[in-house]
Image (cartoon, rainbow, N blue to C red):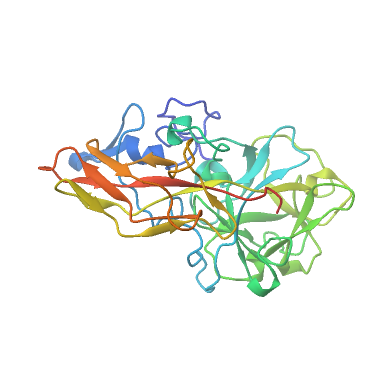
Length: 345
């Protein structure tokens, strides 16, 4: 587990975070609070949600529904999940361990954390779970369905852009094989399917590489002794289906994404683009129901004008930005929010 000093003011898990406002990630308001100070490259923390553009093509801020992060697949993201272990004492979820954003990092579970309230100004809709707990599902065969319960597919961490991987240590088909995140390549070790356990509301998550002989779980070997935050995740073959360490609560989750950053010079400018959520999900509206809900990442004198959703309730387009100082050029950009129609997988 990585340990870094905290530079933010939100409640945090101990000795984990190295982001600048929200614990555990370089994400969302970290984008606004972090600046590089000249040639020395020192990172400074700003108070509150400052203004800064973000790379909307990076995994953390990308619009979903486009080509997945997978190298060898041209399939699309069809769902975004949180995956919470049933045996753990709290809301411990599958996550990017130590918020490393690095390949070969061993995956663990940690108590769910949410984004800051200042990232959703209107306060509408459910809270957004931090991206290190969010997993994008990319079906191996879209013809089988869009859900992880319909067939195998990749699980891509929304923060790191890396795939959940049965890395084969000590043996991909042995009890206790470790689970890591790795560059997506479509291999069987990165293909997962969920099966509902009869008479429960939980699921087993199984890798394709061992043909159903193992399941994702906490606690090595036959021992089911969950310890809470920091528990590593393994493939378990002993006691599958007989104990809660192999059981997971899988839910579709709300998420957000950034629009393009445009330079606003003169009095106004438009990004000329349309934005939407995954099929079946809903673009979050403001409290009056007519405008898109958003978080303003624009320059301090730039105001976005989202004058009602366009023809489809899931789509907003041609975002206009108004510049209070037309003699200056400042960036215009917003964060948009998407909610699933249902939380069931």
